[in-house]
Length: 431
Image (spheres, rainbow, N blue to C red):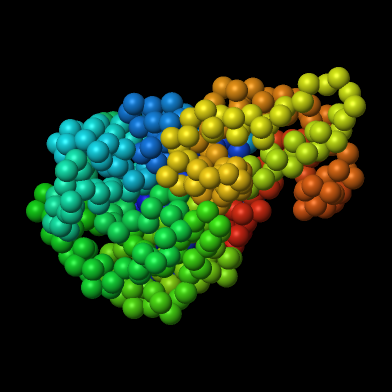
């Protein structure tokens, strides 16, 4: 059996000078996951789907799912859309103590131990180990301290995966992503604080981590990528575009190493030519999340506008989707305060239209789910083509050409795929 992980094959191709990469779909949204699965099926490619430590963990995360639950959810959706399971790579993002960073160090690390074990035991094979954050009352961490904590979690990952493999012997061995310079999850927009990782810092990190892995008799060859800051970021209304010349020393240094490619976080909203330039420069794993839920939210708002037009003057119960979603955000501001201003009308605008898309945290609220159900039911018979032309013109064209069904979920999925298409093309995943 070929035990080479698909990401190691991408690493090998990159080191041979080929501009290939993979899009990492980092989301728990059903619409986004469905779109990614359809994208892989239609292009004949593999798909990398990741869950973050805040979304999915041993306590349920904000989705209520544990790692095995998320795995089963993705595989069940794949079966619905006819994508073979062997075309799916499952990953865990920011696995470490981030969800408990306010707790004392040892307490937070014990929770991180359990987190990593459950991801590995559930068969996730792309593991980003992130111990970069100070814990409790810690102020800073040295590279050595970060590496020590990463090795601790890698040992637990190896143990968990060995147990999984006893029941699933054909599963390839996992690969690891390391990195102590991680952009703020979900974007920050702090351009003044945006600094490209120094090439010397990357080399020092790799040297330190390799030494620690080898001292612990861990397989360093399975470390395939390092997270860096290549100069990309987004905030509520700003996007810091990738500038190859600013990252040239970093990317050329990484290319000269035999062991890793680079992983880019917060690549959301980058132009397609920027994404392609990143892959060309060795940033072979492009993570995207909020841009995909942003697209799904755009589609749902458009569907609601069509719903209002279709049923104007009738007794049909309408979904009130946008209003219900905003009410859910106002009822529990914990997931958007600190990201948006409290002042109106700016706050109301950002809750709806921020690039950071904090509304994604509220899609599983029961009232929002009920509203979505009403919206989908009201449009299940299709929408008039003339309305579709007004509110979703790209989908109108595909409908007219026979490429798209006139069903609400199909319309949302296709809207998300507009963004995925750009990543697939940039990564050379279009077959």
